[in-house]
Amino acid sequence: MPPQARTSAGLRAAGRALAICLAAMACAAAAVADEPLKLTLRSRTEVAPGSGRFQAATRHVEWAARETAIVVCDMWDTHTCPAAAARVAAMAPRMNDLLTAARARGVFVIHAPSDTMAFYEGHPGRRLAQAAPAAEPRVPLRRWCPLDPDREVRLPIDDGDGGCDGGTTWRSGDPFPWTRQIATIDIAAGDAITDSAEAYNLLRQRGIRNLLVMGVHTNMCVLGRPFGIRQMVGQGLNVALVRDLTDALYDPARPPFVSHFTGTDLVVEHVERHWCPTLVSGDLLDGREYRFPEDTRPHVVIVQGEEEYGTAETLPPFARDTLGKNCRVSFVWLAPGTPADVPGIDAVREADVLFISARRRPLPAAALAVLKAHVAAGRPVLGIRTASHAFHLRKAAPPAGLADWPDIDPQVFGGGYTNHHPHDLENTVWPVPEARGHPILEGIPATPFPAHGGLYLTSPLAPGAVELLRGRAAGIAREEPVAWTFVRADGGRSFYTSLGSRQDFQRPEFIRLLANAVAWLASAPPTR
Image (cartoon, rainbow, N blue to C red):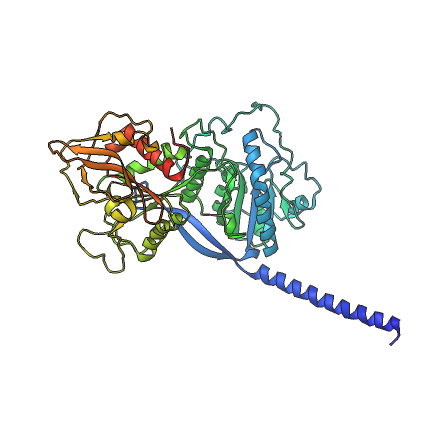
């Protein structure tokens, strides 16, 4: 064969191979685009009507990618609040990764940097939004949808001063400094750009039923814009907030005086209670949840399941007002009766500190296994009052379908609980002199203070326990350990106190004790 013929044949073969490769890639891309989005949605439901206690519940859904859109809310290039602008810049790369992955699956992307449409005049994405035919909304779409008193009484944070943390040189009346969406987020071919009801027109034009919302700020634009949560829920769309790619505009110097990141968590929970479920970016990426670099709060998961001492009422304000300054806090509520499952128990898998306040509550085996796995991994545990007999009945086997943990006291806390003195006896508690230098006793006076509820009989403590507080019931000579630390067989650290009544939560010594114990277990600075 002449050299020219051989070359021509080789080129044809290479061309056929390239065509086959491109066809295979196109088929693979189409297959990926046809795969449903597998999402884990988290919402909040009230434990019992009127209880004021909401438990996190998750459900797994599959959304058709072609029926799903993402709206990116107000991720501007700068902001009137420098701290807010820095957080936007920090999460923008992760957001761009999510958009890239979602776009490849066939999800439609809408960029909504409000008040910057002049910058995008003539942009293909802008023209795409303008060309969408007007759709008749279920309810009128407004430029701004304020708090809806029919669904929400108030926000859980005070943003009345504008919400900027860390100060700003911008003053009311000055022009807004933003000009466009932050450049870190790509606007790809086929994406749309709008800041108005055009977003709804686009969704209806494309037959989109599902909407993911991300961006800033959760307590303001994410809720109130015409493409935001309140108005899109009102249009009957399946809406979900990407909770780790959002941020509240909140100043910790305002009520409820918690960490900025705790303020965002509170607004996210508000959304989950009143508006729509949430998910994390890892559902479309790597399975992980994004955390701001400055968000170093330890995650405390409180498992509450007792009625005798009222911790369902005392722990939430303690979690918000004290732990909320330095910690991320989640609750797992154990409903009375015989639960078939435990909503929210998966939060324990991510806990830095497991906080137990439960009484004689056998659990489904799968839920108990989650708690035991936390312990077996050598991770910290804190228990108050009835935690020494949290998950087993008194001299009885667990009901059918449930499992118990009868040796939790000696195994996890190093205690020897057998009973308690009568509730009507006055108790006196004091720091053990030999333990005065322990970090958990920092700020707690050396003088005795009163405690409430029948004093627990907790001795003897197991080897590895370090007693911190001791107490005595009036008229009874025998003293009992009241608070101690314990190094478990798995190498993990525990703290336990037999205090925990309603009256104890009114004592500054007890609040300080618990705050110090959480900090010690989490190796974090104590909350002041």
